[in-house]
Length: 115
Length: 114
Image (cartoon, rainbow over the protein chains, first blue to last red):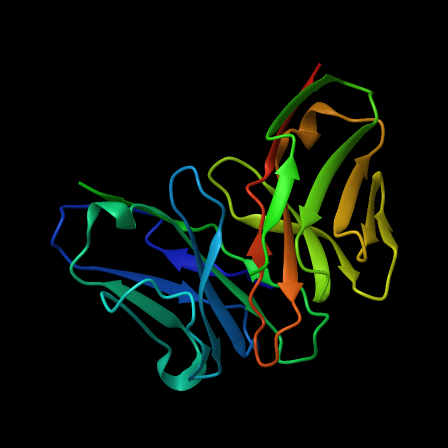
């Protein structure tokens, strides 16, 4: 069974440009999460989808970030316009639709560098 | 606000030693606690998940304990091997209705020297 996949693995863009990150969760996982780790900091939660609905977006830093999950399968995270402080590693995770005891399975991350 | 702290930030030990990694959290209202491993340039691999009602979990040479009332967890690695070198992350799932987010510590970077 394929794990969580993310594309691209790396992205280098200039300040003010737009970048779109993609996440494909494990097949059948209704929960999808976005996290990010900026330089020197811990991994922080961004948002959580249940199927196509945003369940919790309390971690989204500002309105330059837009996450979508049309059809409840893959998800995209768009940053527009990108700022220098957006540099970091963006992780996606997924888990089955179940109770409180489920492990979240993480993808390899997208390394974003904003110059 | 839940905060997770991991000490030490880095640890280097000779192969074969037993070692303990520490994790502390500020709010005992959690559903569970997970230990992850991250290799350079890779994603996170879940090692052990301890439910709030449990005291410990074991997998092979790994043993994780949870003392929810004191806000502490330890990850014990027995007979360490060079392949255990990685960053180890602790994360808790706060007991917040409708939320499934994880709150992470900064990690402990472990190096096992042959």
